[in-house]
Length: 310
Image (cartoon, rainbow, N blue to C red; front, side, top):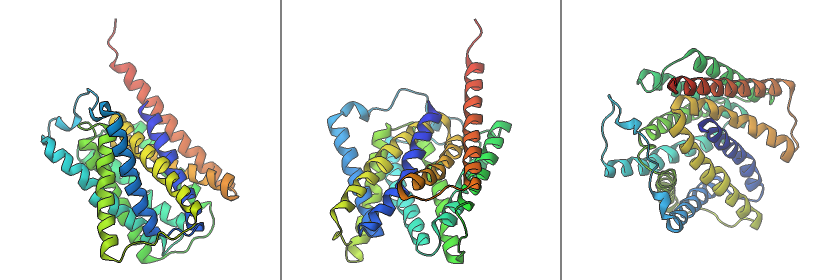
């Protein structure tokens, strides 16, 4: 179930690039896209919590964050970390991503950004949060190699040193975001955690908009439709399923499964935007899917080993 949730999250996040391109075509600016995305998502999640108060309670499960070697956190500190994840982590990651996108091709940006599964796995192992098993190593190599083929198969790309630096900064920021999320994801319900993250990000971007003279909301009506798609599908649903999957799989596996995202983006680009998949991209997609299969098999084997003998 954890792997399926991570894959659903990757699918929703993968669709965001398509929604974003269609929103740009309707006259939406990057600043307006980010602010409306996070603000609308925060409102939607808040409304869900008002209508369904039962979703405020976390599932009864062992708190991995209270494991030996990890500090115990008060409820107030957990809430502060959740808001900070959005206000600092998510807002910074999004800002770096779109700043880099102005300087370099999207394919190369995505290639550099998707170094984060490697970073997450290495750091999680060094911190003692995950074990580097042969299966996880094979899945990481397959997923990274597949992502490389999918993105390089898009054709020639232009290199910009500052853009590359911003893209790598984006990957580092998202690595920290995932690892911090792993410390609080077991203490808060997914809807509550997502709402706090979105509120923090919306607050940061709203403050920036006030300081810079606001954002331009004078775009075509179709732009609002694509912004709603981004907020609902590629933010609310994507985040809820990611946190739920992260809770069940751990940071390394969740990050590796997230490499399914560029495969989704490329596939949707073919069907919606009329772009063509090259044989190299198809081979890369197969590699990413093979990493998913490896992780699924590993998860089932571990589950079987945990079942006591009768």
